Image 1 (cartoon, helix red, strand yellow):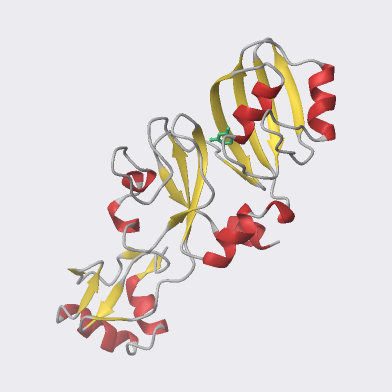
Image 2: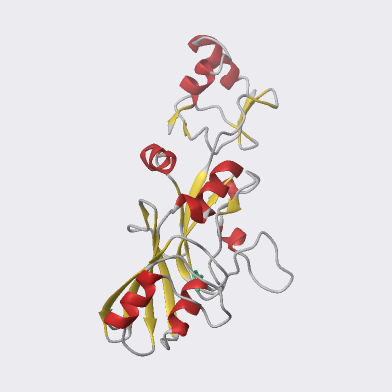
Length: 232
Ligand code: URA
């Protein structure tokens, strides 16, 4: 976040005193609304600042994190179901954000969105090996044979071969699973192939990004440090 007057000066709108006048004359808008307060805090990465109706700087790369609740499909539109796009707050709509990969309708947890196509492809490519960590509640209890089968690379019931993955049993009916690919219903199908049907699934981590304390259903913009970590 930065002060509106500083942003205007840095964007070449004028000197500090000229900027003060522009604001006073009502020639500056923030997300379509006239703004006269030069001390107003703005986030130029996600807000559209215009002078005389002209955008001052194109919106840059935006990456946001949603703590997805169950009941929403990962799609930009859907004829029957509510989509994750409906969970984006108004100020983040119109930025051309797309979900990074997908979580099933019933799955909860960390879902990223970005307007950066290159980043999107990098994050979902199995070759880049971005690790995704899931918490599952399931039938049965995972044992050492299951752990070894995950580590060796499972073959699903339809013959699909999975890359090696990490299964960490937490106790009866509870496990953590780490995978670096995102095949259709992957974790549910991996667990089912070992007879452990998943009843609840939550993604907790993607690369170095974690949900932290982000409440279910809420969205936040990634910090600069988190963005830098995505580029490493
Ligand atoms: N694997 C699944 O089975 N479902 C998800 O939503 C994500 C990973």
